[in-house]
Length: 111
Length: 114
Image (cartoon, rainbow over all chains, first blue to last red; front, side, top):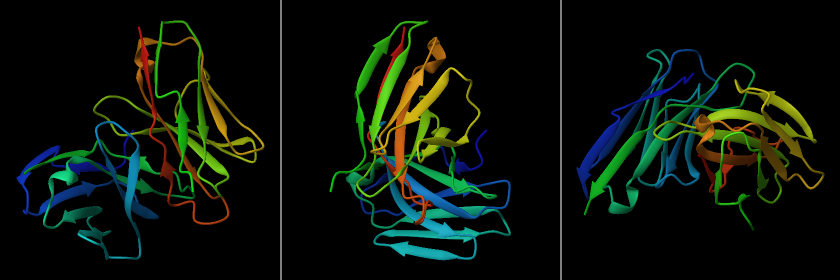
């Protein structure tokens, strides 16, 4: 079973636009992470946000966490063609640090 | 500083056969986790090894087994392959006593079962 569910499943935008992806989950979490995957290759860790944090930034990435709504969002500003990839949210809960992944959002950035 | 490496990159097997996939963790990491990612899905946790022992296991049958060596590298073995075992197998490493929260993933082994 998958804890987090990303929305939308697919997103197509023009270079320079912002991209927003959302993740909803069902149970209380210790942390939530966002990963990127290019063309079915390995996952690249983007950002980790803990349950007591509300917002984190890393370069052009901004992640928010709303534990009352059990949701998170990933914003990529000024997108580039190289941002084309699948983006996954992953949650860890209970006493485990093992992340449980959603199905991902497929982002296409057109040059 | 080498990242996580996996071998082979691609593999084709037939139903009923057995397969062994290999993983070397990132330098300084002592914990290895394995994931299965079916096409169009997110990775699913198989199991995690630390100090040569299986520490946690996901919802996978006993056909999936593993091993960790003293140098922290790891193997994933799958017996009696089924068509549904076709997937990308990802290895991730982390440091047990530091933050296990962040796992570093390898490029994966793509297994096709015919």
